[in-house]
Length: 199
Image 1 (cartoon, rainbow, N blue to C red):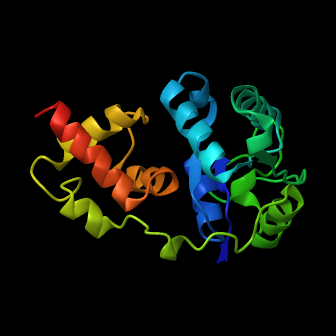
Image 2 (image 1 turned 180 degrees about the horizontal axis):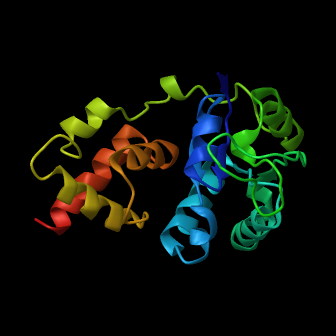
Image 3 (image 1 turned 90 degrees about the vertical axis):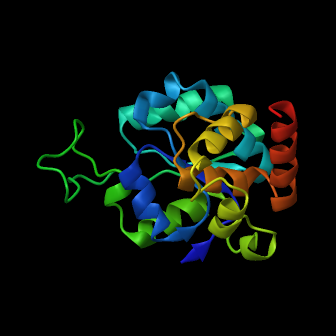
């Protein structure tokens, strides 16, 4: 597992699953063309890009480039790096037939191909030691009432709305987004403000 300082954005959950087995970095997904109508998700990507930098890692087919261009048009270029996979004919194991253009996507790439693409993009390897930077843990989420309690879901929904995060974030995705954008102390301050506002 290689640690990378920047956040990475991929198209879908299978791409995210492939990358999460190779790199230790915050990984977001566009849900394909879903990024075009999800203002909150684009805002979250922009905030992650401003905080850590963002590596755009979409497939090498036409759809991948449309999604890449949408991100490029919404986030200043100074915060972006672009990783490109080579054009390799084939299909992913889970699919019964190749995609429209007959090329493997990010999920079908070998680990060494993915790491080389990230190197070429200028990724910062071993850059940020997340474990020593006051990372917010699942235990913290429980202690703050954001998971494991009878009203945790409601509290998460209120926090997501207050932070202008995408409304359908799972508890794990919320934890990842919080770790990119907030320290534990900043999260506690946000929750205190939220309780005061809704007091």
